[in-house]
Image (cartoon, rainbow, N blue to C red):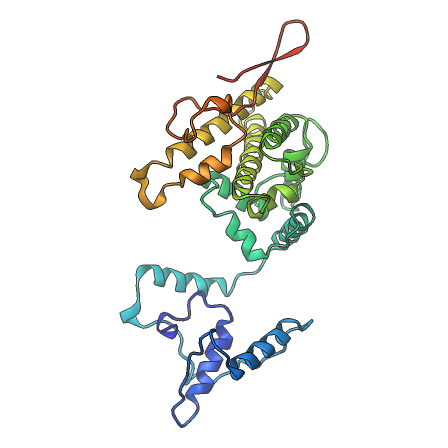
Length: 348
């Protein structure tokens, strides 16, 4: 029963508990009947009509959920308790004191707007948080996206807090562009990170894959990309991979330059590292189709759908190339030919 597990994870938990308390307050027994969807049922139809009317209201009704504490059951039964359930209950209790961060709320609103404008759908906040935890996104990139949505990295105006000394506050400026070094500046505007070259390569790979136009790159479309549904399943998955891997690659270039004080990478180095990164991701996808991973294994079908039309010499590959050695994406590296011009060479 839901109450036996403390109503953990239940939406409208307070309303459910108030309803159960009201039923307990009755002196006589209450019988609850489950009505199946199939068949004609006037009561079910009337209930659906009322539910639809409630959903369409511009403002939610104010419902009194005050209950007699003697009738309200809290916590979970000990004989139903597990370590996982205990963790969820403790976290749920702690989250009651959680205050939403203003910057987080602003970023979620920005993501929703960008998703609607670029991808045609308005994701819910919960869908956005869920999308960055999906297995198509590696753990370190999930962390990067989570930190970025919360504006938790020490970049830009986060250095301008009143308690910081002027020496620390000067870190808010990009030393190359002499403007505030926000995350949007780092990922889409800064000339020192090689971001323009990364997004050029990302667009080139996407255009090999799909006829759907590559979106305008801004912080909103980057953070909305995990929840985007574009074209086929293969197109959506490749888009998520391209966008998140590219953004994280730019962030790593910036950290090496600013934090580790390394020289800024050349355009050629940025391109080489991006192509190497995307080939390693392709290799990982192929590796994860192995049956030894059992339930965690990737479907060969989804891997083939993801990378079709993007591979080097794809016409010479077998239908199932996931076990073939040396399968690479068809993006070519630009090299200086010694005469001030770029020439294209295959990436091998």
